[in-house]
Length: 162
Image 1 (spheres, one colour):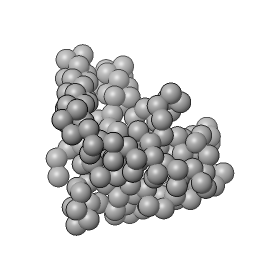
Image 2: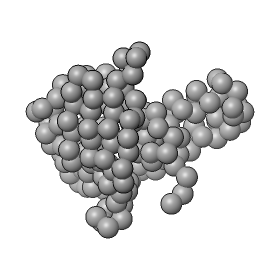
Image 3: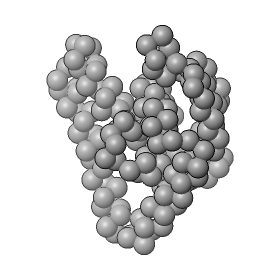
């Protein structure tokens, strides 16, 4: 598997810490921009498929919102976005932005898929079962991730099992 694309937050953090150069930061941001443009082009080429994907993602978001608040879900998604070795972090990086609808963070039938099959969020911990990767089930990675609140009150990864 290729090295995952770092999220814009992580790229900016590495740049500010002096661990990457400005050129490397801009190259990473350029990749994000090109991926977004590619998806926009795909959506304009196949508007019916894009609309179906939007409906699927809205339904998935509705299912998640039945048991958890939007704030809880966004906090968990933001914690996942901080992981360097988690490929979907490139799609979750703006989870803390309230103006981005929750369904925009999910990917049901668009590659790379990002599905949350089991989400249990408690006050101090969160347990997640996530599938991501290819469209076919055999091409997907399934991870069980446990998050816990650290001494500052932010969610951090406690364990990951593939």
